[in-house]
Image 1 (cartoon, helix red, strand yellow):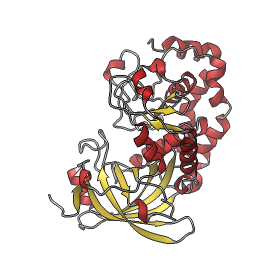
Image 2: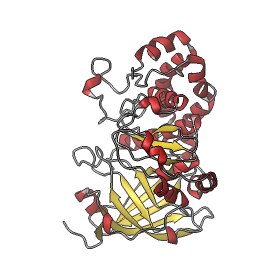
Image 3: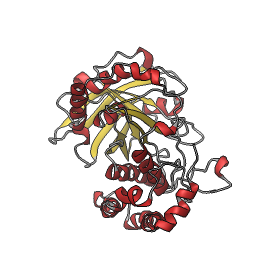
Image 4: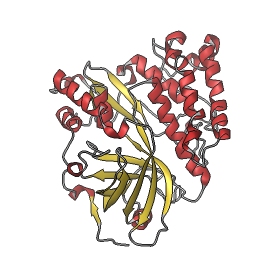
Length: 383
């Protein structure tokens, strides 16, 4: 199938870059097997540039609210679903209700993305990436945005797949609650209109994920491009938080060594943060397609079983390690109990209760230093 609106992303005109993206260009590292001392010779941004980038990212209108955005994506949906080509963008328009209540329409390019969910055998509808014309988004909700990941149900006629998206969204919000060094997300109520007429118009709930450069800028840092990294170089307190968060949501589908579902951020102080993303294979989502890697089958067989995958660190001490979670437990639980107020049919009181029940085992570990020793310290991974 061939559509004239599709074009290779490599031929796309360069969009106006944000300050955070320019900072990334200044600090980009050559791909290497590990971060090395030679990389420290790069001219990283000045303190003023870090501060300016952080302020700009913090002010991004898109992430100043958690209210869902009503939007309509009009493009060749059928081509995207059929081809699943992550190197070709399709032209289209995005109509959305702006912060002031006005309805705006702007051009947007769209392509399929991802690995597992992009495969037809796994999903009927692939995850998408939206590529904005940044010079046309000024003064709108999407001001400063360039490329954004859109998470959407990968089976568009099954309610449980809609619930998977909502549970993954809430997992991101949990990490936001525990740490500012995390990807922000924004709910969208999105209607898909197919310009070819081959795909029926339908509306789903999804969410947008903050651009990685903007996320790094909020931490006064830049994203580092390396293939492998020794975890001992990562900042210990944050690494423990990340490992405990993944343990909390029942996620083993991540690696801070080979950057599987992890972004590496270097902060102004030279600290390395391993920021996680992509939680659809976690136990809290409990997607029917999610499975445990066979290499872990001697310890767990189902994603709803917890296994601590963090490394053994001096910071892995009960009182300090669990404090960020214990102090925010009520706030975390309210994310789930209050979520029904949005009126999404795929999310009910029962869903909230089941999610909170899944976390009870984690809170038992948080509240008991002996359980923490058995379940966390004894299972930590050696260097």
